[in-house]
Length: 104
Image 1 (tube, rainbow, N blue to C red):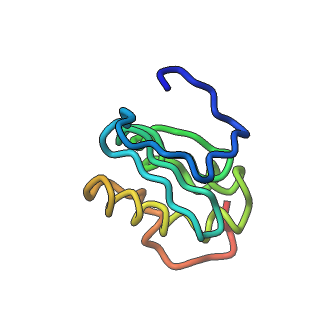
Image 2 (cartoon, rainbow, N blue to C red):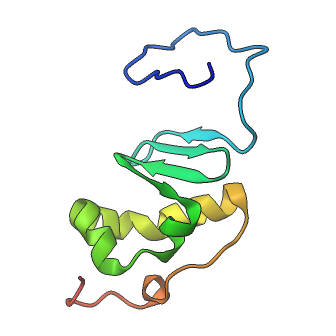
């Protein structure tokens, strides 16, 4: 599967026993966004794919530009998911502040 583009592929029922899958690779479903952590380096949330380091440093404005209030509400949860799977890391200061009307 090296360099295979499986976008749009229906892999239901696929038997991946014996396939090489990188460590720290997870797919998390059931939330407001499809989440994928790839090799412990990249995190895809919906259509946004960024490094873990980038996710941990986004400004409130950058998150709002991704998907508005829905993204702003989900972002703290996303950081906790990243922490759970990959270990605790930095969170932007604005994440821990009470919500105000001057959002972005």
